[in-house]
Length: 115
Image (cartoon, rainbow, N blue to C red):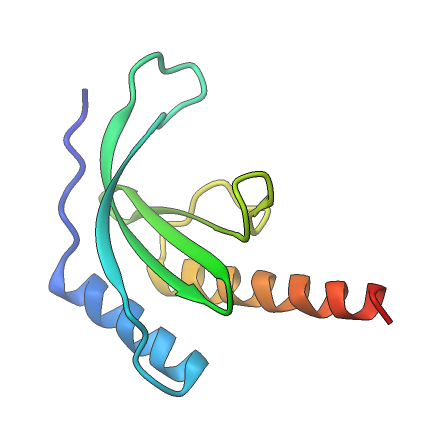
């Protein structure tokens, strides 16, 4: 089972700064561990560090899957999980911006459909 590198101070700074810019304040950002399949063919789960935060009943997670490798998704409930359409990013800032934009677009589409 591959060893995924821990989250670095630089990665933490990128996430904190990006979230502060997006929300206009600091978010309660947590560093957590999660078990995922790195490849769809994997039988074993790999423990990976991840960033987790919430906003307006929406949950966000960015999982570090390797050196400069990230996956992301947001969800409202377990059965309402969404991504960006990109399986994995090699740039954390791009991953975050894409995730935040996908979530904002989703919320806007939901609001329009309810009008």
